[in-house]
Image 1: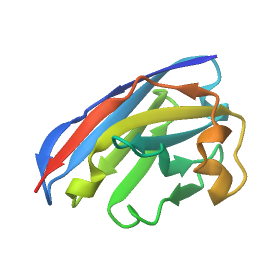
Image 2: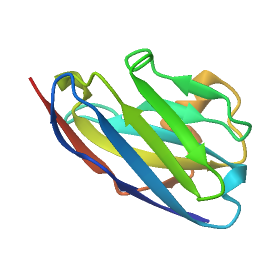
Image 3: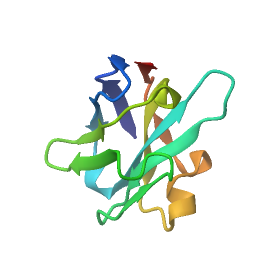
Image 4: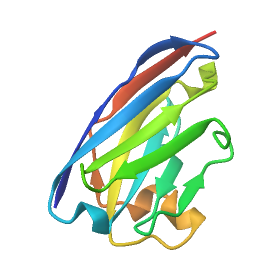
Length: 127
């Protein structure tokens, strides 16, 4: 089992940057696929970026070229570097983990794929 704690959210103006971090506690972190999801008020939770066990990365089209996901298996951490933020990026951001690998972009960015979730960290982007 893995416990996940997010940090780094906040308020920023459009065009700015933020970095989110997720700290994982538990055994075998390197064997988990990891992802960032977000949920805006009144909308479904959507996959933003995912990194597989072997390091392959997927991004949602809406953040491709602006966000960068990375993991450090030695420190049990997952980061999301967010650049050129816009008001449509405003949401609660969640860290998620899946035991073993996910196998495609669609599965790695699907909410149903993941077994463990953090409590979330709020990101607010003002125009």
